[in-house]
Length: 292
Image 1: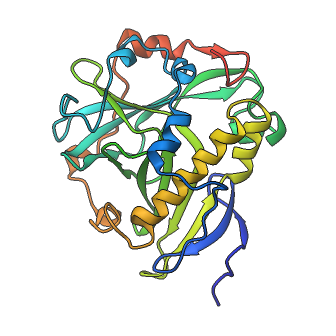
Image 2: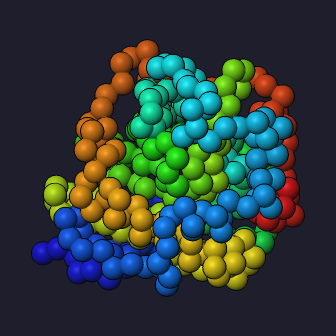
């Protein structure tokens, strides 16, 4: 028997999740107000958050949908940056539809973690956005992951696999549309928006759709990361993603990325480049996630 809509659960990463819909069925909006996603983005893409990147290259980054945006070659190693997180990835394909990358197991990453804990989720929810943090280097664990960033869209789609290589599901990460820089230190920039969607791999054609970290989005309002209006704008993006491609299994869910296998030369772990911007990112810290 399948779980009923509204069933709560805990995600693999330790966050909360609620079963909200199934592919091929209807979608009940979670945002209080309905608006086009571009209007929602206007509430979220504010200069006050650019400091999360603290990188002079970011000032020159070009929106990925622009004709002037740099393009990347298959096999090229680039940085995937969202906020203070920096990950080393390898390009699979880049065209007018969007960027596809592979994150080999063991690839390097930098991420902010609480000073007093190993992981952000070790901090109680009511304090999660208000504790001191530092940057730590780690590696991508578990099987490699394909990520697709549709050009100009406020989300990316991550295709996870189980340890035996079978599809586990697609993670729809709500984030600002990517911006790009080319040349030395080639990178894409975004900023995570807390709320996410998970499309389970089971029951093909009517897969379960889970809303992830809704409680964390609420906590981000209480602790000053977002306003109430901005949080509802994030919920609007979830609604738009569901209606644009999740419910009908549109691109990139219909291109077979859940079973794509990298050639051997693509699957070696990717390291972080020896660049001043990366060294500066390693040294960052802050009194709370809102600062530094």
